[in-house]
Image (cartoon, rainbow, N blue to C red; front, side, top):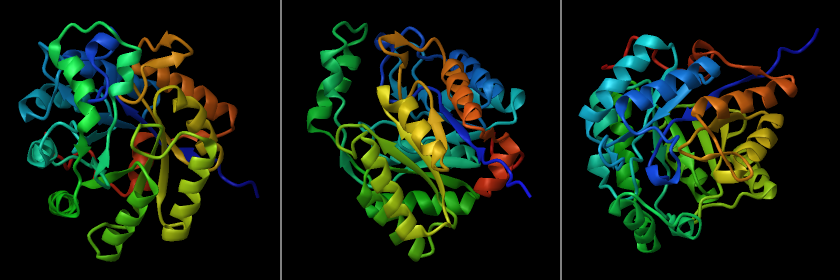
Length: 311
């Protein structure tokens, strides 16, 4: 009997706190732009939409729930996609600020960074020289002395809120130690099995983007969690498609989107989130893999369902 095809969950990270509006005219900023971008990604095959908000005037990342509400309502009304709200926000924010949207809206899924780390964005100043808003240059320059805080107490607090609200987590692991932190919380019963591990490669301060780094992350996760976890690959910048392809061939889920990479090819800006989803879908189908629907993603990730959120 033929084995069933692997169902791959595509997550699309629609905007985010790494890139700034001056870097690409295609980066969605306003609530309507974010909603349009997310809906297009879902139509192209993204089962999960990872969402941040921005100030509509300056494009600066914000965790004000009022900035999330308009696009959350539209996306929920017009798609069946799983909505994943950030608790990472921006490394420049306090943990209390970062937790506000997920606490307010009680989503099916929320991101959770699994350790404090250096978070170096300043090398992008070598590529991007002109900025429309002063905060953009400061955002990059200040990352030279930035520690992205995610202490054990911070993680425990976010887990407690999520567990009370029935929210599961996309555990963003930027290095090997983050897998050990996740195992610590799983052993304490604060994380529900199977965890959804988003392995992040290629950001300065975390693990590198070499295929051997991906293999090392996978070997460590297998040793710590056996087969009781869901795995996904996030490659930053030009590493997005190559690492997602390698990971998918090894059995992972994948994440793309303009939060993680502005590019669709060498020197070519992606015109939309949808374009990146279409590209990775083409790759997956060429590998004879099937793209999971939102409801199939809910089943894999054991989520509470579209109707059980607070928006």
